[in-house]
Length: 565
Figure 1: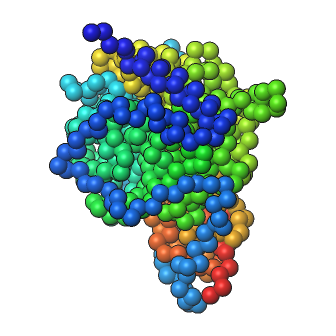
Figure 2: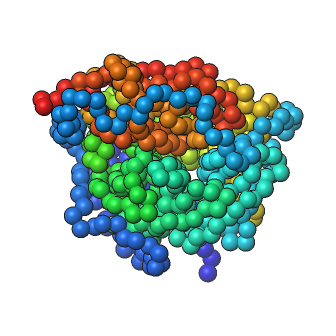
């Protein structure tokens, strides 16, 4: 019997999702209601293996997000009333460059001839079980770490030496039957070094204390997560704002998981937006959580002042559009595949109608369309930012898009590869172009130079939450920073990203985590009320993947809310 190709199946799914998303925007009916008669009962979920632990189902809270979700949390219930020094003071600031060097060889730092730009110089196959279904990766301790798997499972964690990008070396490849296609990988360093990835029934946490020897710690099942279909009730992304893990889980909404102990995570809550939409990417920046629909025309900015209870910010849920309106002056919704937030903007690779849309979300109550690029033949995938350029998978090809002027994005380089080109991940002056369907065997990921000279430009802080000068911030406030490129996480430590009391100079002890250009600071103890704090990212500390240190220091302040007691 003839079977349709994977690309055709995905195209059909995208088309169906486009119709559903448009209906959702026009009628505000929950997506699960629209889907219930046609998509449920498509198959039985896979049977978990003996190593999978079930998430706590009894007593879990499922919240529906409404525009009038109540008064934002203040965190005053966390304050003990102690008039003395606030608990959690971490002592004096440290030398920002005093972090241990990476043990691995580092990111590429190789010059290329102009003729080599845009052309594959190497591929990243991972052995006989590789089904040529590849996605993203990240650098950790000087190595490229790439979770890989088909959407139906069976893959692993591959570790590469990419210092010679045209002659990469596979250092480790640990196989796992339950790992699923992973679009975003969270990192925590509480009591070690851990990453989170998607699995067929929830999320997996892996121990990467030794990056060259990944070890699965737990496969944590989440209620209602299963794989009869790639888009319905599966985990689409994870974001670790340590210690909490936010999980974008399609029609299941958003799960909040307390992973303080990575070997024994607990499910805190499950949140569904109103109107409901199929949640793909989630990204936490400080006390804001950005939720992007998967193959839908909706995105939302959520308030996570209480990290366990996301609430939709009034005005923060918006339709993705290219700026065009209908005859009544209403924005015409256009679906996007995933999304990304960086520098106060969100980036949306559009599907079906071929394009790339940018919104200004610096005011979370009023996301505003600012720019669009129409690209013929494009069908959006994933997007990552690097030094003012967006690297976008567009299915038929990939693109490097100049977004330094967000009102006028321009495609400056095209990357062609056989298959469904969904993911472009930049490292230094090369990009790994990945295909997740219909690839040539052994060529699902190509290493492609995009710039002749090695990267010598330092990273820059381009967004902070709470914003500079913010007042009435909760005692549970976390700090989120975005950089204009990926940063080396070993350089993110207590001496290079810190929070201090302006009056006393005391530095707060905090958990630091990060992924995809976002760095999160979570104070170990609640902040004091009516206190002004300064966020400091000193020059010479945080580096990009090429080892270039921050050249210009970042400083911003915020003041916490007054409490009655």
